[in-house]
Amino acid sequence: MLIGAFCLWHMAAIFSYSIYHVEEVPVLQWISDQRTHFRPYILATSQWQRWNLFSPDPLRRVIEVDIERNVQGKWVRIHTINEHNVGWWQRAPELKTMRRMEDDNKLPLRKRYVLDFCRTQQIPDGTELRMVKRWHVIPRHEETHDAKWWNEWEPNWKEKIDFDITCKPV
Amino acid sequence: MKSVIRYIDRFFFAETSAAAFGLMRIAWAATVLAFLLGSAPDVVRYFSEAGTLPAELGHLVFRSEYRYSLLLYITEPMAVIALWSIFVVCLLCMMVGIWPRLMTIASVLLLFTFHERNLQPLGGGDTVLRNIGFLLMIAPEISAFSLARLEKQWISWKSTGEYLKPLRTHIWPYRLLLWQVMIIYVTSGWDKTQGTMWMAGTVVEAGFHHTHFARWSKDFMDGVSWISPFACFYTLIFEFSWLLLLVPREIWMVRPRWMHRFSLRRWVILGGVAFHWGIFFFMDVGSFPFAMSTAFLGLLLDEDFEMFIRVLNKRFKGKIVVLYDGQCHLCRRSVFTLQLLDQLNRLEIANFRDEKQRKRYAPKITEQDLDKAMHIRLPGGVYYKGFDAFRKIVWHLPVTRVLTPLFYIPGVPPIGRFIYGKIADRRNKCSDGECAL
Image (cartoon, rainbow over all chains, first blue to last red; front, side):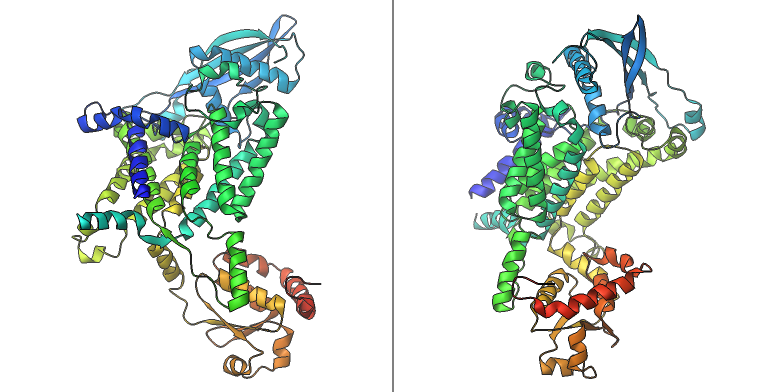
């Protein structure tokens, strides 16, 4: 009996915690509103989940990050974080980390990332580094385009100097 | 009321094979281990106080409540590496099945610990692994295909000559797993209908040109963009098709009779395999295809294993008779292992020291010849011995079948025959439990 009740509870909890964009369906909206009751259980058991993979529309923003070093007044690129410069086994987690720290309110995370770069690359304390962000957006199409169109398409890269920082022990 | 209670009882507590969750345990541990080893160079960066996410910046990433992680207390780089190493050992034990229950609980809790420390690098596959790991942890029987089970089998076989009965378990962990998989696909499908690009069929071509995910060169991805509308609609149909599994089997019986032999669940699982490994071919989405394939293993039922055996045995009739030396401990152990691996039930074991059995299965071979090497008789009446017999058997065991071509590589058979001969000569030096080869 207890096991049966637990199963129903667990099923209700993950359902309530996984539904979004249901404002127009009253029953589903009501179920979604009940998630506060399930919250302690879901979070404490690490069962939190959100299945918005490539949806509602896919990620179209492509970013790359350069780390540049100040060498006698000139900025020299010493590292680029993109799909070419991380190992295939690190590609998904490292690029995900980069995407997730891109928001404006995550500036302290990006600074920390560069300080960690100083540590791992053994760059001397006091060295000036800066982060340069580059991005473009893949076009949103309402109809499919053929191979020729995509062949001729060139990404419209934009670039922004994000911040300067001086290497120091962390 | 009684019938409702009976229905609920049957729904959650009907018995099913425990093999599926045993396979899922192995696949889960292997997947987590592979990706954990991939993160080896970044353990300090991702999970220690010296790395990219110290506690003081945690408020930018973490929730503040109901969050538990050993790594909130273990923060020094060396200590984090030590915990990571313990995690690796637990996963290895879980995979091969040394203390499977304990090691599964330890591995799942350690996965939670690492994920709750830094969720920045986590993707959908990591979430799936957490979700199904929780089910493995609470499932009542996960020891199928484990060394712990093997030891029990050996004790039983040695003392009674019988194998233990196949492990059975209640079906409720399967129900929870099926519900979890349905939630993944249906809520994901629902989210897709809220945008415009999935309905326009242009998501896949955009995804193919996102360099973080695209696996091949731009030229190649340009060339295959034409599949975008088909792949988009396949995705939507496939994801919502999981809803059909909510329809009770009794109602499905209204289908035309010729459709009864097709299992809808099996078709959606096959659709899932095609879906995820199709994505894997074109795009790098981390551990997601591996995690979902692991979940699919847990969704196999008795009928699927039966079908698997039926399909593989379709063209095979009769039995392969294995003639072994019942007085030799090494031979008894080998036969014990062969029978365990004989999932297709193709082998028949005969002790040639028993005159009746010898006369029945090998009337024209002397006991002296049989004593020199293991002999097998194929259903057609052809005999093989020694390494060649071993090579034939390898093909008929599902677990070892994939190794068969190795034994046909030029140069391998003479070496195999030599090694086999040495072992056969010295086999009687084995006593119960150890061999002096």
